[in-house]
Amino acid sequence: MRAIVQRVSRASVTVDGEVTGGIAKGLLILLGVGKGDKETDAEYLAEKIAALRIFPDAAGKMNLGVADCGGGLLVVSQFTLFGDCRKGRRPSFDQAAPPEEAKRLYEHFIGVCRAKGLLVETGVFQARMNVELCNDGPVTLLIDSVR
Image 1 (tube, rainbow, N blue to C red):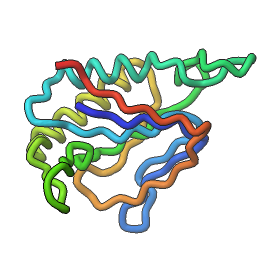
Image 2: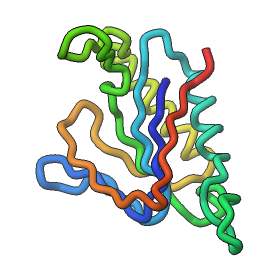
Image 3: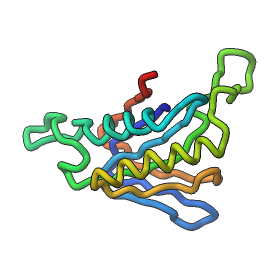
Image 4: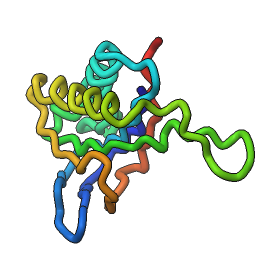
């Protein structure tokens, strides 16, 4: 699994002109599921992201997690994170998990985050989405699960 994690002051997802998920302060997570990923990959990423200390404390040092600052998560499925652009001009998505498996693990990731007591908003799996965000910092991290 692969996640792009962005610290945001606000973020939202719109599908067909309707907002399906949105947060104020927190993390926008673009989540890609690859072939061979398992529940343990989703659990690892959820644990890692929930514990990331990337919000500023009173001294301005990145020392707080998303829960410490009362923030939420906006999780958006993003199979294109497994796009391989090394050959030709059109990305290959051969390493992305099939949709049924990707949806199952995407939902498992969301469930693990919610079980940690985090506010979690989402996009719509396999929908064409418009994502709006205000990246705070900017802070953007790429996190891969360990295989």
